[in-house]
Length: 181
Image (cartoon, rainbow, N blue to C red; front, side, top):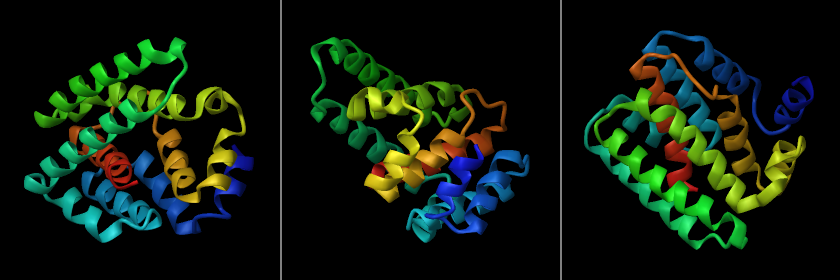
C-alpha cells in the first residue's frame, strides 16, 4: 500500500490524497461532496462536477445518461477474445440494470453492480494485465489521467454501507470521469 501511495504522490498533491482519505471515512454528506469536488479537481473536472454533485436534478440525469451511453458504446466497440464475448454481453445487461437504478436515484442498490461493471470494462479493455499487481502503476505511466481515476476507483470498497447521499457522491464522481474520458 505504501508503495502505491508513494507512486500516486508523483501524480497528485497531498491535499488530493487527504481528500480521498476523508471521503472514505466521513459520514457527513456535505463533507463527502467537498472531498469529491477536490478529487474532481485532480481529474481536471472540479467546477463542472461541483454543479452536478450539489444539484440533484437535470444535470445529474444528463450525467447518468451520458455515462451509460458512453460506457455502452465503449463496451460494444472494445474488441475481445471469443472467450470474453459472454462477459461483454453480461456487462451490457448489468449496465442497463444499473442505469435503471440510477434513474430512480437508488445509488446504494446500484453500488456493487456499478463496481463490478467498471472492473469488468477495464478488464475487457486491458485483459489479464488488470489482474497483475503492477496494473495501477502501468495505468499511471501509460495514461496518468486514467491512472488517477483507477487509483480513486480501487480505493472504493467493493461493498459500501454508506448513506444514499455519500454513495451518490462517490458514484457520480466515477461516472463523471468515465463520461468525460
